[in-house]
Image (cartoon, rainbow, N blue to C red; front, side, top):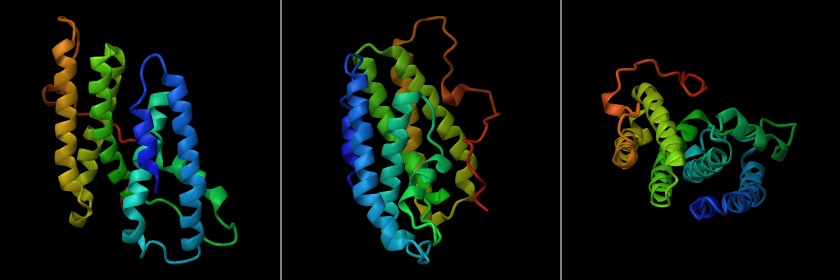
Length: 208
């Protein structure tokens, strides 16, 4: 898939060109839908596509990463699995079972999203956009906290353990960068020092 093009486009964003860059990213994402996802849907709909998941999983994870990154930058919110799957329904033949992205690929895509958000946050700090970087920091911390609850229930073969380690490094890098420029006397609390244990899940269904 060409989802990386969307990610690269988002990283071109600055305070001055945000709207223009994100509009282009949305168009690039729509092109991925039209040119690649539609082909995948046509090839797999009506089959036991769950059994073929490993063949198309990497591309789907990358698509989730791109779609959620673009959505966060536009709205400041998390694009849910249901919202992503809703975009696939118009591509499907209504007479057969529609292809749907499963929860595992969605979670793995979110894990990769945090790395892109780390790079985005560092870039925004260098441009003086501290508020946006802090917003990214809070968002990534919330994703990490929730996925720490889900990860133990996941299959060991899912690569989630390794992705959780990389995700923690991303969280710590964002926190370190934000902390180094944060005004003294603020209420900023690093992830590893927080005593808050109530982390609502990200609106995702159980793995069972």
